[in-house]
Amino acid sequence: MQKNIQEELTALVKRSLSAGKLEEFLQDEFVLDFPTDSRYGDFTTNIALKLSKALKDSPRNVASRLIELIQKEIPDSGLKDLIPQVKVEGAGFINFYLNAGYF
Image (cartoon, rainbow, N blue to C red):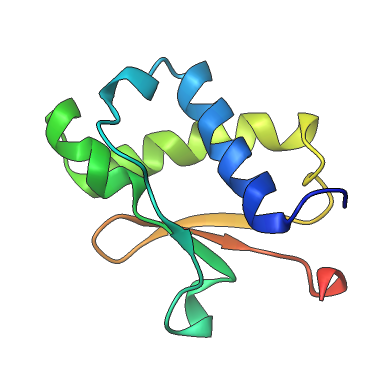
């Protein structure tokens, strides 16, 4: 990949926000980081937690909505062969699981 995987995932999330007309609700930057426990994927983001107050919905519901948008964007991205699963876990974190072939 030309870009860092973290940059690619961040761009994917931002495109998903735009597609869902949600970018205006994000007041500050979201974090895309490594989960503290590898059982929760390879990358995680707190974006649903950041958006939940503005959208007046629970973080888990917001995360589920975002995952639908993300999954629609994956096939048109450079990540289509790398991300077999995106899940909402915990209080509303969105976790990305990468194919073992990436590593």
